[in-house]
Image (cartoon, rainbow, N blue to C red; front, side, top):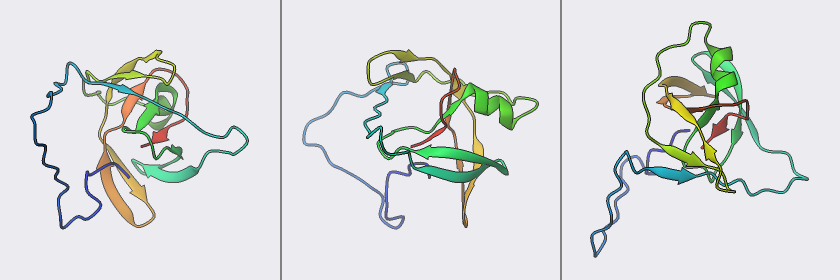
Length: 131
């Protein structure tokens, strides 16, 4: 569902670097969204419960984040909860910026699995991406 950083829950994922790397602060965080696919094949759609409401999400195994459109967000809540601020900057494959409105913690249920995820809310009406 949401990335935990480790496939094996008993062993945390760690990687040692020989040289120090540049530390990215929240203000500098910029991510690119890539969608490379075969237009003749339909996307993989997963039925998930978000806050006990059924939502169809497009599975994007290459995405580093889970994204929700403003349109989906408004459909899920009659009275919108307060968003958490986010300084994440997103860009599409072609380099165009995507406006991030913030993030929101959401209860996620898929089959017998339950967790909490904080998708980024973006302006527009695109698909909800499960990254």
